[in-house]
Image (cartoon, rainbow, N blue to C red; front, side, top):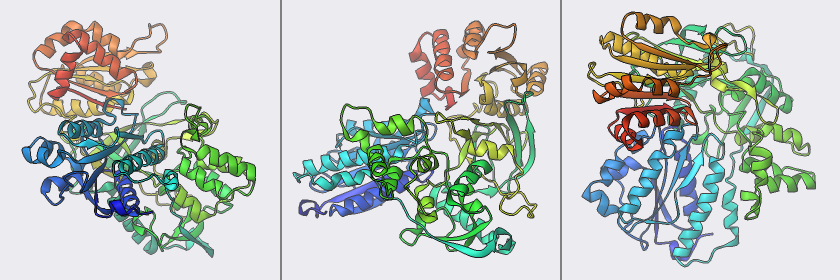
Length: 611
């Protein structure tokens, strides 16, 4: 409930978001603090810089709550100016004495830059004399636990704020740990199939999908339906797959070497079919969905006839681990008391008991159990279509390093895609959403086999900013490290350097054996032309000692030291868990210590694009 002591106070919610997740969390904060009786407002972080937002001055006026993500260590686009502003006298004065809290969203697959911007923000605000309510909150998108981490952090923030204002802590505060999931109104159109939906009806569906995506995650990026020019296999063995894929750029869309391509694809047919079997519905069934409570948060086009396959394939994530919020919602539907109790236990934050193992982590997250796997284990739970769609997270795009240069291909763009397949710890077959979608492109529409047109793939260019760019001066030497598909941006860099007639290029590439030697002919052609010194590490080549790129870097220390003395730029792309730290350590040894690498990083002379 609301509290009299808080009625005169303000919550200023500030967010930095590229993909929409932090924007959605900001809305939750707005609703939550309004429920406490506070006057709430929400703005992008850049709005503070422009002067359109006035921060509360102290505890008596209110607090500032920030939710922000980070992209390659950089601020989101709508928070790009805040750090420079905090360095100004006006910024410092505005923040002094202000109670604040920061929650960051990140992805631990990008370990080198995980939480980089939110951490800088927290540290800077503290250094300016702002008053932290609690330590930085962190949500890992890769772990699928953002909403649970956010709920736990928000509960602690609320308790800290109430205590600061000498407000008694209500018992109901624990309810905030389980955010309410949307429930769609779903109508099955009887007697109709996907074949009855005309092309005339589907065009507005595509336009509305793009419009909704623009609001949720595309923001200012121009998305378009890809026109594929090439989709070929790069690996010579059948058990693995890496694809070279080229697309025509839409008129007016440009890119730079080092940028990323965002891809919005469709879930694999096998995964969609599993959900359809649970729902006992056909893939060509026609449905109309609505979300009257908050239509803006839906990625799915509302109040339009859609085939059910497309709903499940394009608009929701089907293979993420079940969340605590989903499990709590399922517990309310269980008709068996023991199943209800078990689902409630799994949904509790940290198991509900300090110091004990968390049942959710042990039994759900560590096994990567999906919502569907949970439903199959709790037979007394029945979830109708509208509720199921609301429980599932909205589909997010995947990002790939662009493997071409506009100097060589101004009207087309290429990506290099390692196709992800394997088994989850639960034993379920797991398929990477976009990598498998791209591998199978052009894909037919399963809901209507008579329709011969390929299903759409939506793409957009994501500017990586200045963090991963070639030096403007072609005379500066370039050292590149890109094992596996980490070679992708280096291929684009080499195309650009060749166009600029820049000759001093060194590449360390790593792969298993000859079968995995990506773009071999191209690389050897650069080498033969005198534009490239190429060093290849084979980790599983028969008759050859296991070798990794960091070992070759150590072997070539004399060459690299000479290039680094002349101001060479270093680019590293690929695995963040082991390769990137080992490569950094190898360069640190050549340069004279880790602080020398850090200095290069600060000068944007040592650049990483790692995951």
